[in-house]
Length: 118
Length: 111
Image (cartoon, rainbow over all chains, first blue to last red; front, side, top):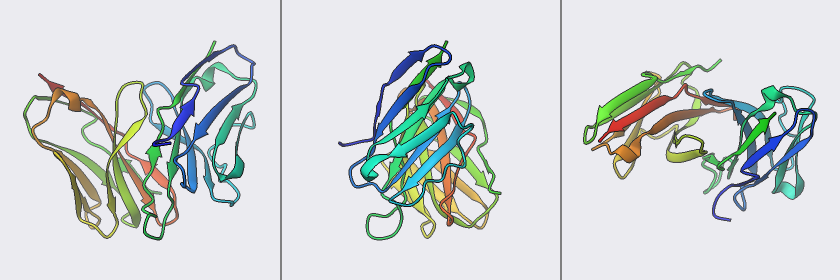
């Protein structure tokens, strides 16, 4: 697609339920990032995928959070046993990576998935 | 550790005024610097990207500069419009592929 696509745009769930958030990066982008933005706060790094390398999971806040990226394209962020403090906007970004003609390292963000845990 | 600060945190100007937003950083070993705008409840829209070897980039009414020696980038907005009202964020990446967001400046352009 033309840009980074995220779904769902809004998700309301009950405490304790599992949720899955999806990110479709820009075609050909090798790098994919997940960030979280709580109300009125800055962006918090969660996880980073680069090509076929092992992901950088250093930002995941607890073991209830996990993410995968299948075939080097679509990524899914899963939150198990959701808590009210998980309520936030989850933003995905992709990048062509670095090096080469197109490798500017520029990040392109999706519109985000707003998660509300009741 | 890289620290990225944007001052002021909030800015209100009358329509038509030229303005400058600031982004200061503590470590000059950067790979690139990117400016974004974020509208309420929306994602981030990329405005300009400056590579480490560049001094400035321009797009329409926007001009971004980079001075690594002083640890500063500025985003200049000419002839501001109410539609420019948003939060502006700078994002630095270092040579180790780590990213650091600025604290943001909330801009309001008054008609």
